[in-house]
Length: 347
Length: 76
Image (tube, rainbow over all chains, first blue to last red; front, side):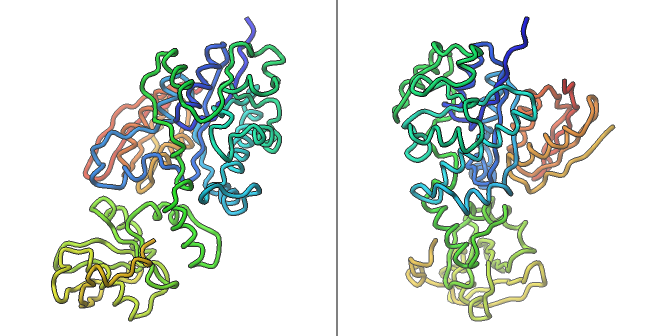
């Protein structure tokens, strides 16, 4: 018996990539999944941090998909390499800071490298023509294949019939007649195919697996870059953009205010990197102050922090301020009333 | 041999990635104890082990800390 041909499948955890991998398995192809961690993945983070979500069932959808299909999954940390994709996208951004086309090219290129290193034959994705306005269009499909270097070793089983035959099809590794010609934004064909395979439990697909497609998140990232005068970031920066209420009273400092216990606990881990504020004699949030505030700025920050504490109705209250893990000193301030904090300060 | 991995303060999937990368350096039969603070590992590390042929020997939660002990399986 000849060895089965081997394909590496880009697995997001959504329905399309699940189906693409399943379609290949049905043709006797040995499939292993690859999943990339950019740092902007929505997967689980907010649930992991927020106390109210502590008891919600959490699962990594990519791992779950791999388990359903009985295939291996390789999760690859691309946080560092991804910075250049986000900061310098050749094809620009989508509606927000989402560099979807460059991102797809990058991921297919990484998968192509992995394929070559591990002796696999081709790459599959769950792409569907017309599914996404930026990265999944008829005219961008060849761009991804070419710029990634994958060329005709990139097969999209769900929309292959709308595209020229790829190497696996021409060589007869894959039967083109058993591939699909899905197109457009409708999810119905995918749901029907899932039903045909007996798959009923899958992540609801919405393109919402990346924080860069989120307007508010993108606004906070732009603000971070503007404040620093530099379009760079570290993983901690982009994780903290997912946490707390962000308030910028002035270009040179911003507050991150914990919204609940889970966030406060997560932020505790950053005490040595930030100025912190906490209430002294009543419950209140932990506040991280990012930037270089002066003494008057700290008083202002304390008044904002006080507004989010249980002592907000008191005439004055005490807050402990500490410089990057140093000793605490106490400030006594009058909490702001809600209307005293301009709307424009909220990010 | 028994090894340890500190994945505390990392959010999923990073503890899984660190586990995966550590296991890649170990031999079949080796034991790895992973400490983490993201409770998502209670699902994710066992799922990763099942997919890749490793065995979870024990897992427990102590306050805010999760410890998962796994034994490396045959990596083909």
